[in-house]
Image (cartoon, rainbow, N blue to C red):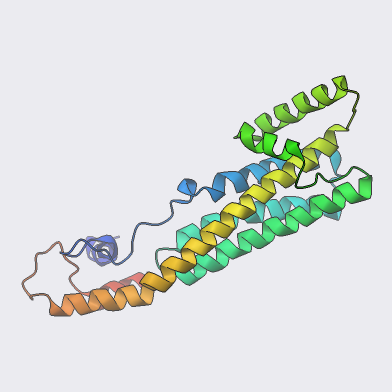
Amino acid sequence: PPRSTLFPYTTLFRSTPDGDALIPPHGGYRKLKSFPMAELCFDVTVRLCERYVDRRSRTHDQMVQAARSGTQNIVEGSAASGTSKRTEMKLTDTARFSLEELRRDYQDYLRQRGPKEWSYTEPLRQQLIDARCASADEVAEWVRDLRAHLGRSGRKPRYEEIAANAALVLIAVACSLLDRQLASLGKRFLEDGGFTERMYRMRSRLRESPRNASESSVHSVDNVYLVHFVH
């Protein structure tokens, strides 16, 4: 595309003389604490479903899709945050809802197959959290080690029982992190407003600035928005 088409769009991300930018940095979902934990829940779920849930069953698809939705909505919310805090909060809440749905699927899985769900006072929950597993392979290794340890003490839980309970622990951590993230987003929205308020503040400052401002400033906000929404 010709430079005349691209230039107005790029000014959306330029800083004004006071150091502010119309569209702030956004899309850094990998820096969020919630994303790697949600992604871990997704990977663990895929692994468990491939081994223990019939691929032809609706439960298999529901669990995998709910787990995937948890990660994808975090990504999409982060990508939308530059121009819509409302959309960011809505998608983050959708991620939270998806993981809650996944938690219920795991609870049904355990209830229908006989193994018990670990209580909140079960010490194994904290042991898994303290292990800080970063991948599905590390979770699987933790499950194998725990099963071997329990076997030596006379208990013989099935692998799938430990794996499903471990997934529930990880989901609980992910949901807790998303709750904190939503609370932080809501607080910042109340304090700073959304994109519309930001646009109004910047337009007001631009009107008040001298007409001979340096070329590094935004040349025409109206033109910027026209190009942004058309292209």
